[in-house]
Length: 239
Image 1 (cartoon, helix red, strand yellow):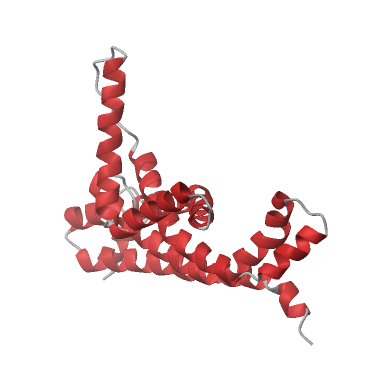
Image 2 (tube, one colour; image 1 turned 180 degrees about the vertical axis):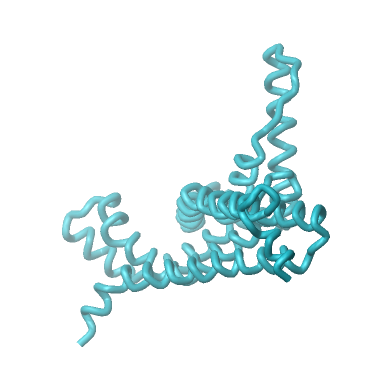
C-alpha cells in the first residue's frame, strides 16, 4: 500500500508533479473557454431574437450544429481543419514547411463553440422571462439601448441564467478530458501515461476521479456565491 502511495509523491520517481501539471492544464483550458464561449452564446441568443431573418437563421444553424455534433467530433474537426487551412494558406504564400496548430488553442476554440451553443439556449430562456415593462420604463427614463442592456437587462439575465450556466460549466469541465485524443497533456492524459507505466489503473483513475470531483465541488461553491451575489437586491426587496 505504501509503495503504491509513493507513486503519487512529488519526488523524481513519483507522478505527483505530472498529475498536478495535468490538472492545471485541465482547469486552465476550461477557464479559457469562458471569456470566448459565454459572450458568444449571449450574442447567438440575441441574434435568435433579432428582427432580421438572416441573423435568426444563422443563430439557429450555429446552435443546432454545435449542440448536435459530439464534442469529440467537433474537437477533431477544429484541430485537423485548422491545420489543413493553415497549411493551404501558408502554401499559397510560398511557405512549404510543416505547419502545426497549438493543441491548447485548438481545444479552446472547439470547446468554446460548444459551450457557446449550449449557453445560448440558457440565455435565450432567460431573455424570454424578462418583463417587457422594464424595457419600456428604461426607455421612458431616457436610457439608451446600450445603457439599458448593461444596467437593466444583463444583471437580471445573469441571475436567471446562472443555474443553467453552472450545468454547462460542469459539462465543459468534463469534456476537457477529450483533449487527450489530440495529445494535449491534461489530467486524463497524464493519468493514462501513469497507468501505462506503473500498471496501477485503480490507483491513478481514482486520483483522477478525485481531481474532477474536487473541481466540480469548488465550481459548485463558486456558483453558489455568484447566485447569492446577483440575488442580493431581490432578497433585500422582500418584506
